[in-house]
Length: 68
Image (tube, rainbow, N blue to C red; front, side, top):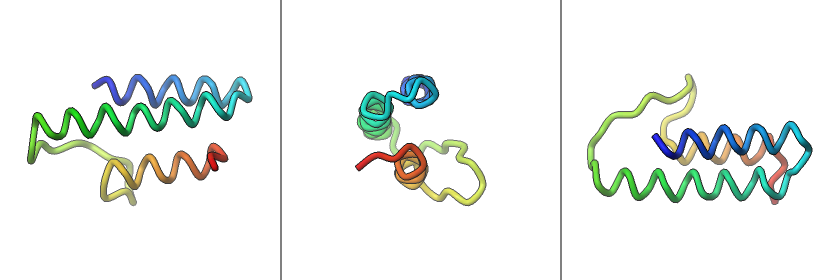
């Protein structure tokens, strides 16, 4: 799924200490996921334990990354 690619790009940017880029990739991941979800309503996705929605995951990742 494209949203996962953007999450990985965010991780890569984070490890290069490029916080602004990492946050932008997370925003893009969220937008791409919403587009996918609109085309596939009701489709199940796998999330890490403790996350109820994809938005929860993005919010957690943004907090850990230091996004404003």
